[in-house]
Length: 150
Image 1 (cartoon, rainbow, N blue to C red):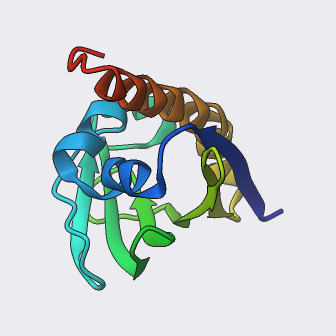
Image 2: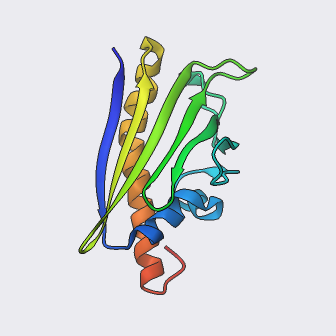
């Protein structure tokens, strides 16, 4: 049953600008969640949000940086569960950036939804990623236009 979320987005910004929003904790927080990310392979970090008891989710995504190719590729594990160290979702997020004449193509692949109990997370994240990437686009566009209040 392994399901994979795949999305492709276009930004009229250079890869370096998009990369900043994928790797700088203060910028990631603007469009995704509070975090203690560092762009260092092997770094353990967390994304934090409100718990969702109906999903057996304690509000913490436990992650580890798996691969970094500056301005081209970033991947990290993405694990969660109901708390007390129990992990029910063990997945991987991969971002790939491809420069174009007019900006950057951003590819997202979020894999590892292999258990029946992961289906709710899969459904929520499939839509959630699109909404969050739109937030990133809004911030990039505002920054490009000199407006820091996106």
